Image (cartoon, rainbow, N blue to C red; front, side, top):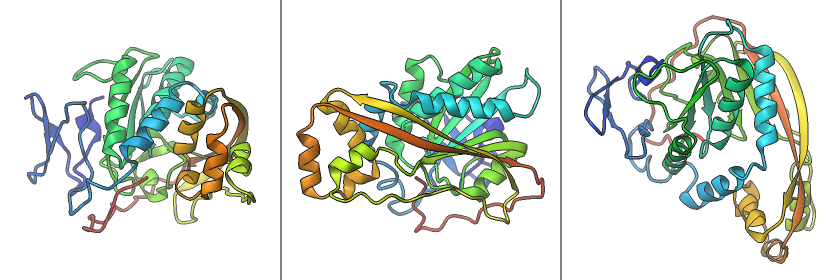
Length: 322
């Protein structure tokens, strides 16, 4: 499996070919071209006014996420995701899997789930992590290289191995061929149901991980004078070709033993931009904090093979995904 077997032009939907020069250029028959960045990713965000400047997480958020997640705090979530996928994956044991992460951020979850899934199933896993942030793609590609997971041209994947590549893209117009993916993920990201249905094979899996009702409740009690609890259970629309399989709740403690760990977790949450100043002051005074992560894993299978329409061509106001 190579990138040109999977990717399409984000503007016209035509297949992409890759030139031999370094850095490479990806082109479609219509002449749309996308340069390979030094870090190894290809920017497949649809071009347009301001679209590539202010989309996705900025560099400080990406750094905080990478610093926190790569210390292993959320590894139980990756293991739970891989376990759930393993139980329901279609196909033969020797077949290579294509996994698409729709909202990959800096790629830590993408790599963790791909590695665990490859190890536990004995199948080779090619994982593509898509996010609107170029900073996230750069961080993800460097991380994959550090783990020996970055794909090489023409490389045959041994059974039980994984390769990971992160790419900037619009989650609601992914540069992926129809019916290419065996599984798709949406972790704490906007859920693009129609795109998931389009890129998945028949019998492919769509896994959504969302925050539980009391996710990070101890952190929220520090930040806010009054904590409001809400339930959110993702549901596929009736006009999408998904059959619900199961929903699991997981929880695990996070032992944050330094102000740096506390600050990095805070910086990667939605609370960071809307917490009152007195909440920030209370958090800044802490040297240690035990927090409970509570998450909900929801799984669907694409059981209806009716054609899913191609997404409309992007308008200049489109801003990308997560």
